[in-house]
Image (cartoon, rainbow, N blue to C red; front, side, top):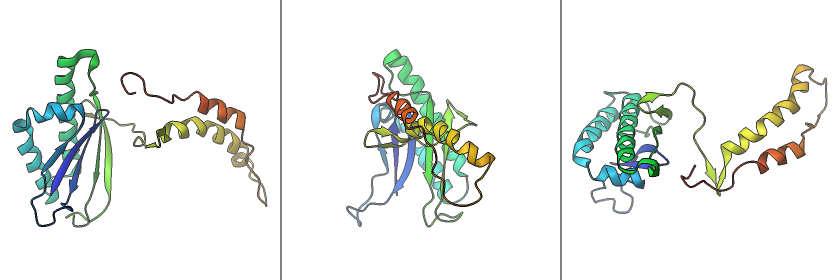
Length: 193
């Protein structure tokens, strides 16, 4: 099995892969990406074996998914602190992280499924938004967040006093939707946020 530890905007994900390019060959064990991955590659002897051991225990059902997620969040926090000391304001790894996992079909606690956990430092966040989703350069969550109040305002009269029969189109304020969407950033800032 291969586990990738992907870092995107301070988010680490461990993913398990099988070797599809060389089915008979030995798969790569870990893949690192991003500036945090560059830092982690300089100290792999400190964290690689404990992580692989924890992942193996998780695969066998000995530790739960949150133990792995907590461990990965702590590794992200350690990376953030080290990068903060080294690069200060130019640090590209943030103190917040998202750990996402998916159960394989042969998982001991049932195949399929998975989860997501947001962290600030090493602490689990209690209020968690959806997982960021960028499609063709557009932040889907930001678009949804901008449009939701307009839809909520449009549906409120129907919820308070539902029509007896027939179809009734929602009276959407298209100008308000356009105004809200135009206010969204279309480019990341200098720190890619």
